[in-house]
Image 1 (cartoon, helix red, strand yellow):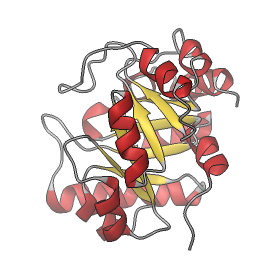
Image 2: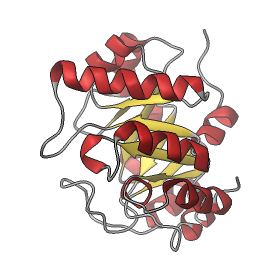
Image 3: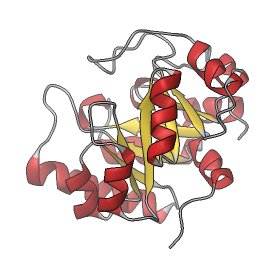
Length: 218
């Protein structure tokens, strides 16, 4: 199988929902189903933080959420854990700057899997592109409480810088994005937005996802 095309990747990134068991107000399965009903276009299983599941429990939850994604045609991405992604036969992996480079991940996963990389600057972005990443997660755009190790907030400046430098790789903004501040992220040149808590903890998960979907062109 061939690598995913950029145009298809851009469509998947439009509303990228990231979640693990520690992020949810309701059960992870109910949360994901409601988010899908609201129009999310890709899902990342990110099981991190105090109280996060490990081992067989993390695998079992990942399998449950993957099956929900598959039944709705939603790409299922695993955050950081390449071994888990291989065990689940996930659609891809999202890696941080402290993880293996995309080139090595590609060797382990194969050509047809999606590989995303977090980038916080133009040099990091260029390196990820050189290593063969399929998309970049750029942020944190706004202050966020979902990631304890989040980098310095840069607003939309990095997204704008990458586009002005001529990078055409699909970009998704992440970090503190809400329905009230999502518009400038798209206007800056991002193909979509990544959301954790704004959807996962919403009183009306499907309705909130629909709001985001309208902003990002759904």
